[in-house]
Image 1 (cartoon, rainbow, N blue to C red):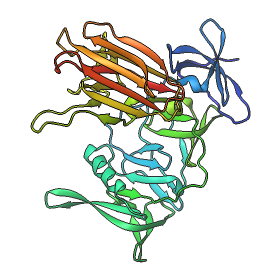
Image 2 (image 1 turned 180 degrees about the horizontal axis):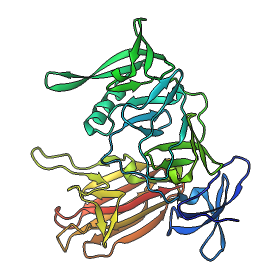
Image 3 (image 1 turned 120 degrees about the horizontal axis):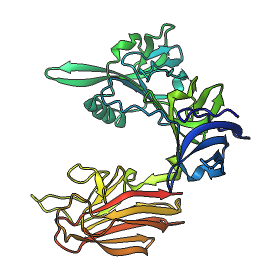
Image 4 (image 1 turned 30 degrees about the vertical axis):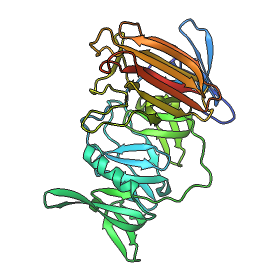
Length: 414
């Protein structure tokens, strides 16, 4: 079997059978170090590959974090783009003003990708779309848009960004998007009162929101597919198609990648893994005192906005917890293990800082210990099978200042 370079991988997820393949990749398990190998087959349950010693290894998909395909996803830090969000959470980034509405389908115009890559062809039915946001790269636009969508009613919205005096406002027309024209640059829109109009798509300078009826059947999620154009697809199937991948989203959109150089990775962590920093706990802490600073915890950063660091290692995901704080996470019995790296952050300058940390599972003690600034970070793995509530309590053993604790890489695994 011919083996292709590391940056090229061919993967298939088919309901009834697996495909024999031979493509290099980096397999990232939920626990342990990444493994470089040659994928030989993938089915709905296992990824099978050969490691550097040609030993065959099977890893259950439920134990995988990702399969890295080589090409890196863009940061989009200096890129202007519009954004299409589908009803399943899929996000497609498009060139500003390049999206076309052709009859009952939408054609997104891809951002520029790396050399020798080709954007996917996209089949995107109108009923799969939640919204189109113009100039999504502007933070203020995203903030205003979130407020608008949170307060929306039961109709579609045609949104125009207008200048009034020195401020910009979002003027929204309520109604129903009927269809686009053959050229894709105009849409027919019926307003709430029944008046029908045809608008140039360029008039939607704020964007468009679609009020989609709930689906009777929601397809299961297999993984996220992340490509080199800034797209993140919530996939119900990913299958080998020629020399690329054919991806179908949970909402019914289809993306056909002719070359795998356009695909960055398959992310299996959704559904298998949950970081505490992505969850919202119930918080118990003393009531704030008027005029005094008030802190409980922060996500992924210290209170000063710095990355979490322990023993020279940075943790992109985690918690910074202040003393006299209790966090309660409702797990619902869905997870099996809880992993965390505990320690006082390197930025804390008080050498004798000490913190009391208590972790409980449905009232059962898992961990109770004083953690010192001078201690090495503690990596712990706890059994939380069938646990309904995970409770974390942080108390100070010394002065309040410097008595914060890092929960680096704090994650739950099913």
